[in-house]
Length: 94
Length: 376
Image (tube, rainbow over all chains, first blue to last red):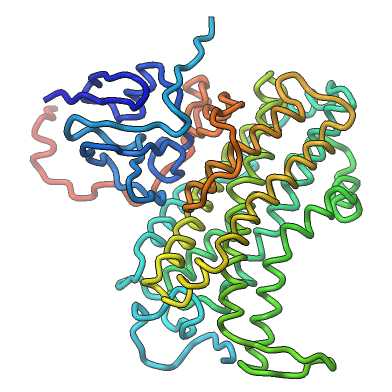
């Protein structure tokens, strides 16, 4: 079943279910930091305000309580997230 | 109290704290107090790489074509990176191994320090390839005032811990007179030194290194010194893992389940620890002044690098549970993300080097029905 992802001070969208949350956010053109994309660096953390996720691989990075690692998780329910620094769109390069 | 290389007491290592418990005896990993350290070890081993795998022949040409002020930026940055890895290649071993009490953490520290020695070797590889007299560059690291000043800031917490622990091993707790000076050795004081050391190591890996990476990638962003950037990418991948390691250690120390006294110390020293982050950010900005003293380069100048210092410092402070110190919210160098990611290099298929692999992952159980689709 498709789940709705709401970005605080941003917008809501329905990610394609095969994507990780990070990939889904990138596809929506949201600007978000990343480095390793496999769960060990911790760069792509966001705050999980409401909802649940399941991890596709066990993250090695230290994840503080209330945060999720977007590169290796997928929504498990409708959810609300807060991106550090706010929801900013990527500048499209022409 | 004296260090022993093989503790002959019989005890359950999983009941020991991470540091300042009993010395480790058997390096066993069948039972572990913190399995995360073994995951870090496995990940680090899967990253194994050698600097010689990266071809630097075009970098020599690129370097020769750089204007003087850009050569100054490139070489100073490389010297700084060499300094950082010289420290990190030995200090975790010297400072932490004598006081560690868990076998999996001990092995993580050794694995971690070893990977830093690969980084040091890669700087020599780079320097040998771009200049004819590598000795000038290495010698300058110990004589150049701007760099030796950095060395002092980076090593002081390590040195204070090492000094304290060696006196403790020699003399034990209590009041002692050493060289006519009265000193008071207490485990609590050593734990304070340990906490500050781990914070400063996290700052080194998570902030100082990333500032230097930004300079390396700024050259590659305009298609110059790309071999160097490839090596730095591999180094950045290792450092991302190391900073995860120190974040875990800091969190376990502050949490108090490992050692209740450590949690009290972490609370007491919170302001001082936070100040280490802020001071490092200021030092990195001073360093940016030195780098760009003769002029900026396309895509990077003192102000932008300063903003990146503040941005990355905030991010790292939040990661270990501190309030961010600076107002900046947006990454001023968005192109850093793709350079920091080690697996997104677009290369011709025949040139691909798989940069992360695990051995022993082959399924060796082959049944006769696996061949049922074959016909001769």
